Amino acid sequence: MAINKFMWDEDIALFRRMKGNYQSEREREFFETLKYREENVLSVCFDWLILEPENEDRLYLIRCEYSEYLLGKEGNFEEQHYMNLAETLSANLKDLGLLDRDITLFQWLRERDYKGIRYDRNLDDL
Image (cartoon, rainbow, N blue to C red; front, side, top):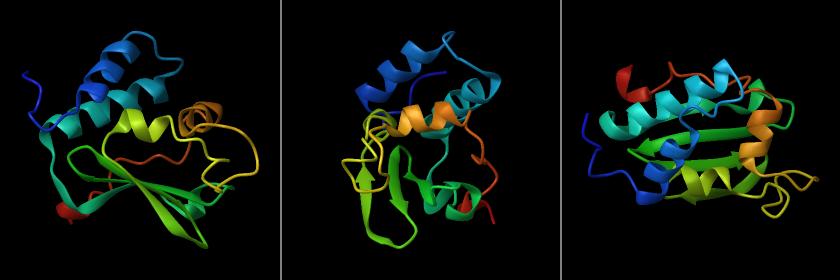
């Protein structure tokens, strides 16, 4: 399948780098699902990947359009907007004021083995 013209070079490189290097089945599902969606699935009304009640740190992660992401925390009104997944995953949660420890979103997701991530909440599909 040809890569969607909306996918950023950074995400193309990320998906290539991750392929075959997954640490778990959930990690494989995460990257393969988001690659497919960035290539094929427009989300105007938001694709809610994880919600605040689904994790002890009260973070949320939303995909919008093809490859843009919103990252935030319950009670924190400064939501972060990223143009691609690579940039989103490299976000330092302490530097953003979302957590008290020095950890990237990628490390946080891996640490919890992607627990709480769901793929059935693209509001465009409802």
